[in-house]
Image (cartoon, rainbow, N blue to C red):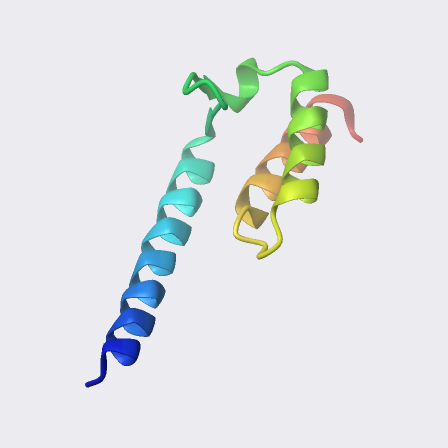
Length: 82
């Protein structure tokens, strides 16, 4: 196997692990803020959730954060029917 092939395989493994971690955290509903605080989504206020959704949409070019978009949207629906 060439060095390039090994790098590609490692990249896929890394991406899989990252996606798995994101999915697991989203299922738990524990969001980690930019300053490393861990918050339960139910403790976040509406503005924080809406701003986080906007941030994800601006910065996530690979849809890796899609599980979090679903969690945040579902929380807004649960609270406000939005």
